[in-house]
Each structure stands twice: as C-alpha cells, then as structure tokens.
Length: 327
Ligand SMILES: NC(=O)c1ccc[n+]([C@@H]2O[C@H](COP(=O)([O-])OP(=O)(O)OC[C@H]3O[C@@H](n4cnc5c(N)ncnc54)[C@H](O)[C@@H]3O)[C@@H](O)[C@H]2O)c1
Image (cartoon, rainbow, N blue to C red; front, top):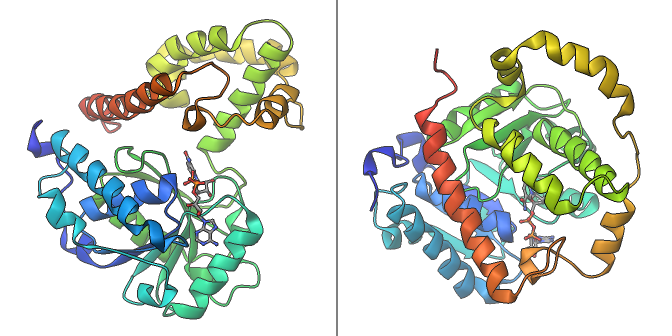
C-alpha cells in the first residue's frame, strides 16, 4: 500500500447521505468517490437485477483506491454504506443527488422531474451532463434554484476535476455548498458562474477534436501522428500549467503574433466530421468493444483500460507534487 497520508479524509460534512442516479461507467466511479469520502450513498439504477455486479465493481474500485493510498479505511466496511435500489423514494435522506444517466435531453428532464416529485425541496440536484446547458434542464422545474451542473471526469474516484455550473436560475449558495463538499471528495472544483454549453473543458476539448479531425480528413496527418504530437506537446505541460499559465511561462507576445496568422486558418466547421460518422456507424465504441480509431484485440483493449486507470493514479500523484497554488 502507498503512503496513506495522501488518502481522502472523511470530514463530518462528508458523512451525510448523498444519492446517485444512473450506474453506468460514470455513475459507478462517482459512487465510489462519494463512498471513499465517507458518505453513505443511495444509488438508483434501472437494472436492480444487476445489483450484485454493480457492488462487485464498486468494491474492486475501492480496493484499488486503498492499494494506491487513496483510501485509509477497510473497503468492505466502506461498501456497506452503499444502498443500490430502483426506488426514488429511497433517496429521501440525501442532501445532494447527482444524476449521471445517458446524455439525452428528454431522458435527463424526465429523471429531474421524478427527483423533484420525490425529494424534499432542500435537496440539491446535480446533473453530470457533458454539454446540455443547465438552464435548459431548469426550464419548467418547480425549484430551479437547487439544480446545478456537477460535471465529473472519468474515472471520477481518481481525477481531481469537478466543474460546478450555475444555470440562470441556480442559487449561488447551493453551488458554493457543493464546492466546499467537493474539496472533501479530493477534488479541485471550479465554479462556473454563468451557464454555457460545454462549460469549460468540453468547449476546449471539442475545439481540439474538431481540429484533429480536420488534419486527418484533409491528409495532413494520421490519427497516430496527431496523437503522438498532442501527447508529447500539450500532454507534457498541461497538468502543470493550463493554457494561461503556459503562455506566461513561454512568453506571451509570440502567441499574439501566431494568433493573427493562425486563427483565420483554423477549422470552423459546425457539422460532425465525416470520419466520426463513419466510425460510429461501423459500430465502434472504443476500447469498450475493442473497436475504435485503432485496432484492438480484446486483451489489448483490456490492457488499455488498465493503463488508463494506472496513469490516472500516477498523474494525480504528480499533480499533487506541483500544486496550483505554488508561488
Ligand atoms: N464517460 C465520460 O467520460 C463522461 C465524462 C463526463 C460526463 N459524462 C456524462 O455522464 C453521463 C453518463 O455517462 P456514462 O459515460 O456513465 O454513460 P453510460 O452509458 O455508461 O451510463 C448511462 C447509464 O444511464 C442509465 N440510464 C439511462 N436512462 C436512465 C433512466 N431513465 N434512469 C436511470 N438510469 C438510466 C443506463 O442504464 C446506463 O447505466 C452522461 O450525461 C455523460 O455525458 C460522461
């Protein structure tokens, strides 16, 4: 087991019950994060028959956190604080409920409506949407002030990222309450005070993805070439610096000069790239089904999944060594 001093320490506020709705990829890692922080978690799934499998997967993530030094307590004892249910009524004791169901506007609206019907007025409702404006999800709700975007990054039990987004009608005090709690979940939360589709990181990531497709579709580079360049350039500095600090570190005037020439030439298409359509239409989901922009054997895809998790633990350790607040 690695140094326990960096483990997530449960604080009294982190012992209040919280809820999660939707136990797909992210719902399971969010649940793991909240359990590790000390909360009893009530998790709502449509497929309660798969409850045993869900508990096993969350148990495995908790054991992994313990062996990586992120959890001090016995993973089995922590897992006992998890209730998996299909009933929204069971969420009644929760002070905060995070939905993490499929990214579909109507389905999210239906789930938020169900939550409003069953939860006390004081319960904060967080939506883990990737890009639906929170303001749209607040429309026609009874208590829009308690609805926030709570945007996690996968694997949520390891990453430090969390964006807390205020829709037009969210109450800032609710967002600040979640931000204070999130610090106890091992996160470095960002408060997004004004709603915008895609929030911060998805706007920036999709601008990069659009340009990556442009370069490949127009024959400038292959996907492997793009990945190699991005890994070794942006990938090298971005955990340390972020874009603005990086310009400070490397000299601002050059960026202005490059902007003048380069911005007019960057891709500005507004439709899904043809290559993306073809890949998705072929049934590719990525390592989840061993079919993506690269070829995988099933064992190779599994190795990439493990590598992704291991790297996330390693980069978390490295980021802690170089904190944002360093002078
Ligand atoms: N995967 C990521 O890296 C990532 C990152 C940030 C945000 N998100 C967002 O998190 C959300 C979930 O993404 P995911 O990757 O876990 O997807 P996923 O497909 O793995 O899981 C979605 C889950 O929602 C469940 N679901 C669908 N309709 C439901 C309903 N009406 N009630 C209860 N459960 C329902 C499904 O059964 C499934 O288990 C999406 O909004 C996604 O945009 C994902």
